[in-house]
Length: 270
Image (cartoon, rainbow, N blue to C red):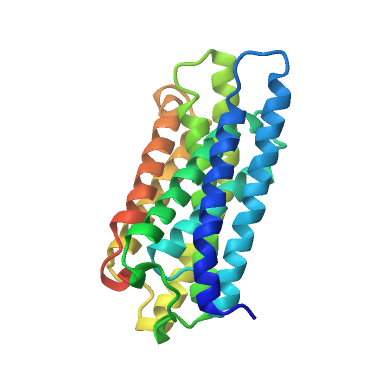
């Protein structure tokens, strides 16, 4: 088994590699207007896949060296969120029109992993070094609650790209991209609903209540409602249907705020 110190020292190199791979993938996904443009995009996809594999190895050494799931602290959460976005894209690139959002997925993963890299370099070691879970987090419900939440975040991120690019485009392309946004929202909502349900079960075991008026609990529920409204209005008529992409964008903004801005109270361990 790799020692925690060895794994921790190796992480900086792996983060550098990840930032490089994701950055190169973005460049190749956005080639100039040349005859072999599609081939360059395939190179970008290959780099994206290599970044994903390196990302999995980074998570692997973190798990092996600590003996726990990598969700403790903002640093580990950023690493897992970044790989979740890439996973959702790679699992869905076959969908008609989804491959074109590879640059968005690579950019989002790069931004998140670069933020983790900056924490690794400039933040105190107490924020990035491996640490053990407090007793309240030593529960299978905690792990099962967090994993679908991060995967849902990945789905919502891809849905955001599809929704925001549907604004101001031609009618046929607009419908195609809104359909793609809906395609990402459905699994995202299912995963997020599972996460909220398991979070309530975990709260019942840890604190004796199914629901606690905690900031992250509250804003997670608000985010869920916004995305639910978006799905309900997707096939509506008139202004309701036109509001679909804006609700997806608003839900994504709330998701980002919930992830970064509500780590207080019962969730201050993040």
